[in-house]
Amino acid sequence: MQLIDTHVHINFEVFQQELDAIQDRWREAGVVGLVHSCVEPSEFESIRSLADRFTEMRFAIGLHPLDAQRWTNRSEGEILALAKSDPRVVAIGETGLDFYKAENEEHQKEVCRAQLGIALALDKPVIIHCREAALALKNLFREIDNPNLRGVMHCWGGTPEETQWFLDLGFYISFSGIVTFKNAIAVQESARLVPNDRLLIETDCPFLAPHPKRGKRNEPAYVYYVAEKLAELRGTSLEALAAQTTSNACKLFGLDDLAIARA
Image 1: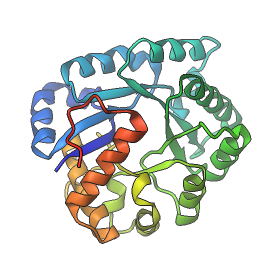
Image 2 (image 1 turned 90 degrees about the vertical axis):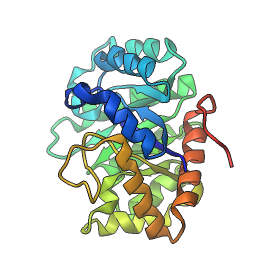
Image 3 (image 1 turned 120 degrees about the horizontal axis):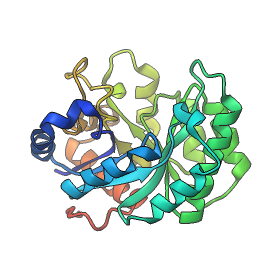
Image 4 (image 1 turned 90 degrees about the horizontal axis):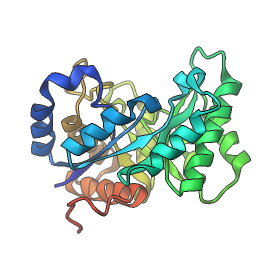
């Protein structure tokens, strides 16, 4: 069984003292690929160093919506140049909208729109963060109205209705440890309706550790529990769920150069 964790942040300080042990655990859990997201461009070199160290890792470049105030007139060119600088950059992001306690909604939209433009220019998928902003994000995507825009709604926590909006727009939906929480009823309903060929799994580590590890620091090995819960919710085997989500990740992010067995 092979799994791909499509959203990690293992460059964070909380991991640095035991990265080799963390790698051993993710390999024992069957994780054969990682997609490392990016909060801001200044992380790029640390993430690239991790990809040099862990050959199963690919990564993204972008600016998180909660850091939209860091956007300058040089940011677009910087992200574009960094994305072109290494073939292991497989996505732009994470970008998107986060309106939880936000006072800069219009600026977030401008920053997101610019990064979507970079992704389209480079023909790369986007990694989308969306918190309390689903309607605004749907409208932004419709405003752009480009059939080549593709990507993933990461760490998805939306309602079934919102899930369908983004499925209709061609996006993949990625579930994190939230789907294992007992009170995550809407997320679990969403997890049942996503078509097989649009489903992804992730940890978003170090955040949101799944049951039975809830409350602990999350890590890539725990994507196993996300896959296990999704298989239960969807009435399929863990092996079939793993094979499908691994195939989907390879398709979206172009991971054909990873040593992954194909069914």
